[in-house]
Every structure is written in C-alpha cells, then in structure tokens.
Image (cartoon, rainbow, N blue to C red; front, side):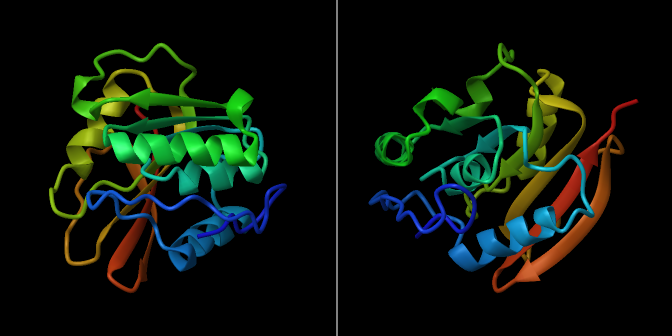
Length: 186
C-alpha cells in the first residue's frame, strides 16, 4: 500500500501483520479521495481536522494529512496495528500533525481534542457496530457541526443513522459500500 496523493505521494506504507486488521484497499481509498477532491462534498480535506476510527495502518488519515489536512486523530485498539500506525507516522514524518488514541472506541466517554471536520469509519466487517460507533462519537463532541462522515462497510449490510446525519452519497466498490453523510444536529 502506498500514499496516493499529496506531499508524500508514492510513499510505501508499513503493512500490519495483525489478522484483525483489514486495511482499506488502495483502489477504494483512491476512489474516496477522488470523490473528496472533486469538490462536491464539504468540508474539504485541506486544512481539516481528521478523525480516523478503527485506524489500523492509518492509511485513510495519513492520506488526508498528505493531501493537506491540518491534523489527524487515530483511534485503534489492536496493539500490532498501533505499532504499524506509529511506524507509518514516523516514516512519513507526520509526528507533529497526528495523535494516536490507543484503546477501544466504546471506552471513550468524552472528547478533549478539536472536533473533526472529516471522519473516516472503517469498522471490522465481522461485527455490525458502525451506526452505534458514529452516534457515540457525535454524542461526545468529537464531530464538528457540518462534518463529513465517510463510512466503509460490507455492501451486503444496511446502514441506518439518525436524522442528524444527512445522507450525501453511496458508492459500491467490490465487496464494500462507501457512505457519505454530513452531521447536522441543528
């Protein structure tokens, strides 16, 4: 896997050996960022605060930093994935613009960081926790009003979110569905 665009374009990412991590494929990642770069969705990645849930190798958040995001917060609980994520951050030179929050999303009850403009959520395909996770992250203040929430999940699964999440688009790539929502609670 490589960074596709931006200042670190072409940089190879360290691969994670953990069996519990399923990185977003390069083709799907490229499709997501092509959608974002197209200008149809706001906010844009440039100058944004990024939140990468179930971060794994960090490919989505690191791609965003490479493309001009101001900062990225990565949440991951798998210890091997955290080691890989740290190695990728170091390799790309993004230490000053990234923060790793090691642990389970279920244990985060308050948010002490700037709220995210763009949220990536790529939960494990084997447990259907995406909707609950996104709602909890919004409830604790981790998402800015109007933020763009990008969710990857199996195309066979349906996604239901409350009315505060305004549907923007859905795309299918292979076995994956990509949903885009804007969070507008008011």
